[in-house]
Length: 623
Image (cartoon, rainbow, N blue to C red; front, side, top):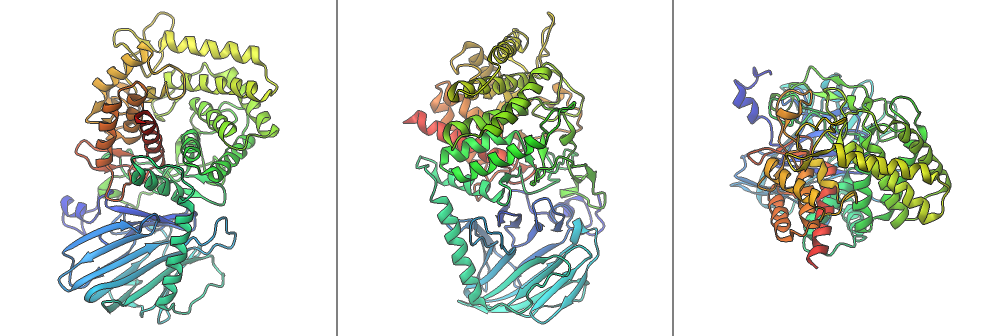
């Protein structure tokens, strides 16, 4: 880790805003993180998986950012979303007055092929007279590409061989003495006045506007964006006890949707660590098949059928592209346009968030075998067939071809849900989800009268079930465990929180004595104050160095498992506790550390999907 700029490790840490002190904005093509101190320190454009142009979240010195600061310093800050929207407002309270920064990316129409990508920052003085300074310091291609800066009065242009970034402003933009690559605006606002900045990305040679923007244009964009988000959220059918948290989760999920393709990315960030200073740092700007069932369940339960239909179409396109080799017709994860070639590399020039190197781009898990994804895929399409518009003959044919492959390969070892890197094992969770794949196909065949090899399917379904019950059960622990035994050998006694989903996927009744015993074992071994570890990393030998925090999705699975077993008061308390671990905006990273800090990529779709499911089911159980 480089500390030359800061004088030591603690000073270096101070240069980074905590992960939780961020909010997400976006335009359904990409997203940006705006910190509570007024800086934008993460932004990839023009797509979620494009290289960053602001990336100081991963290297405070080399990554680039866009600052917005009162000259007199700040006494306190507040950050919130404009009600029922994804417009982020940061208020800075100073001795000279109060200033408000509105950050948003306009989305004016649904499914707009002529969409213009803009990141808008409107700065307004609420009280007093405010002297402000804005530093625009992009670092293109993860900080690897040099760029040329051109200033044209109210416009600053930053150009590399691959991308041009243009900022138009209502106040003059000038050179920064310290660095010829940056631009600065210094301006003063009295109460009621505002300044406008609009960032646009342009492909080389594209004709992009340069004229300055009048502040009143911001009001037009603001109102149109408010209308878009409120119109979208108005489709929600949820009216339960936790409306604010559920709707914020829904709005966050929508921000993680790539509207042109219908794909939902796991998170908009890469490289945020599961342990400060550790090496478990991954790129999550892709689409995991595993998220599909949870995404569709959440979207359908809340009433967002259009998004569910688009996601199913995306899933089927991926399935249709697949082959039948060792990894089968389905891959673990895909790019937003459905490609599975995602080679993993390290960005060695970046020090990582608070020194947490390496920073990885791409994801080697795309080349893993995870048999459980067939269960998640088929379950998601089963739900859509049941609650949505129904599936086509072509989709059924594609599913049957995928199931044929699975019926020949289900009894192998794999890396399974947690994407371990210690070699393949025979995972109990994978067998459960293979059972789900076969069982849901049988259900759809019966419901729709679709052609199916039911004798073969039924035989394999029953074989899978018996194997889990015989080889996935640890008699001494009184629990289902992470890996299967076999041939009279008991399974290793490793608890695994993924097995909390057994009643959710209808594998076991929530009142089954074996599941109740598993719930108690997980509660004793993996749960701490409603926070749930996915497994004990010291026992599991997952092939990765270092430790990790608790997994927030597992914590919401815990809530739902308590709900389904009738322990409703415990479930309600656990859910309320989990809400206290959200950040100030109601958003969650992948993990929560033992001292309550948010860790891992942020915000994570999987966590918000599980929150919605837990809240909806607990609401129903409470009446």
